[in-house]
Length: 331
Image (cartoon, rainbow, N blue to C red; front, side, top):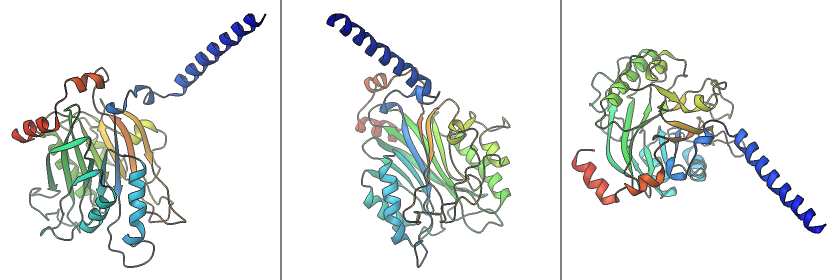
């Protein structure tokens, strides 16, 4: 009799285990079900940290610095794009996050005390093989240049990163567009589209930053290739891919914690890339916030699903081989 009870008990365990597996599979959406191993995905974030020029109160950088560093450290991002970073802010962030290397260029004409669109990347996972910065203007290569009628120069800083284990490369474009002029934004996205289309290698890419416009804006629609005229594959917004019915959740909140407009901070990838998750980090401490923007993030798989991480590792090269090969070719 005892053996019969044990048999039914064991059958029950098998049944419950199978049922749990089915329920778990049913709960996973299409993005989560594509997740395979940590080697297959990249965690990226975009964060306008607000320029550190406030002279008093909770908005001063000294009162926000530790919150910014803690927020970035806690999420274990692989790549981070910062906007409005001044040199001393970036120095302190790098000191607090030694796991990152960074690339940044001052947007001002003389390269001193101007805002930067910095790109931080995990130094144990990636090596930078090429980089650059352009100014959104009629002369994109001229430092400090801007469109007529805009108050400040606006830039896009880009890097090409190589995974040290797999030798796979990808581009990151981090930008901050004009906050007032729609005409300047429309011209800027066309310059950006040409930059992407003319990249030296056909690697996948991530476009992130403070766009100062919602997804439905005509300039954003052009950038995503909704009108089918941009010279690269169609893009998807990572937040919209995961939350298509929550497009109006704002990211600019004026240090209040309550959004005061639409979502203007975005992370875009090609439609062929898999978006595994997306988030807006709305955390504050005792009513204080690290910035007047909420950081946005996404977990993405940039490469085809049918190529496993094990295959990539087998065909991977050493850090030295990657650097020598890519830098020799100009990256």
